[in-house]
Image (cartoon, rainbow, N blue to C red):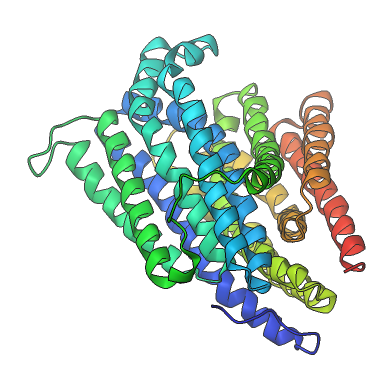
Length: 453
């Protein structure tokens, strides 16, 4: 078992080291996961542009479903962390099993939506040919949501036990396997049939099955005392209700933030192709930078969960200060890069001979400067909500997040972007307002609650 949480006398530097030891592999795992999606798009783009467009549609729908379903996995993390701190292996087994149960049940419930996705996409105004291509992908990858959500549960379980390196290794191996499978099944190499977008789906399904198999084997061999998969079919209504309730709150919180950025994209799309292209590029750059505070926030959930489980208020507050110090330190570096190198960063995504390059660069430069302004707010809000998650406080943070992102963020985006006529930059100022509101409210709630532990 991993070491116990820091005692009251633990120095701040020890907390920094603990967060880095857990957070760095998780950051690497998030980056490797992003590489899988990027690889799919690049390789399918080489194959056929229409197939690529179908993949974009498919993954847009898939990710909405997947992110909400991942909330149940995220709920497992603080519950297992607190149980591990108390040495309660029975509770570790109970909440992890029921995390697998509710994730599988959710996956089965949404599979019809993925199987019959073409009518929905056509109803949303998408071209029939692209909608059919997206459905072809989702009818295969729909089966993959079962192992994909199981992978998320097992990653949360292992993170809570401070076993992050195995996740990094498995995700990197999955990214490499995805390249090989795509090469075979998209293009018809090595004797495999040429399947295009269906081949990309088969590759993704295969990667998810391999990943869940590897994590299951690791869990069995590393923690035999947890007896995680013995009598897996037995229900546990109390633990199931607990994971379901907390997971629903977490899933809706994640959807609220992701939805704000998606809605911002729709608003920018009303301004034309060039602003939308600049928006997409800057969003990709900021998403890459966000993987660092995201990984640190996962570590913060685990460390806070352990301190909360031990009712060690000093360790809880010290750990929070360490996580925020690391997150804000990275935010400062990202901000400097965005301010100093906007044309270099945006230019990496545009062909040198692109006729619209100058226009995209001009808008992208401004958007990246706005993105630089919200680095501190973005890091603060994701770490604050994760610390609250570690304290098993999820319902009110869900309401705070929804209100901040939608009532403040999207309202401000509309006012700045369209009423005041600031265009894409105004929409991004709205994102800044939403993230800042969430950072202030969630941070205030955490410190108020942490003083009572």
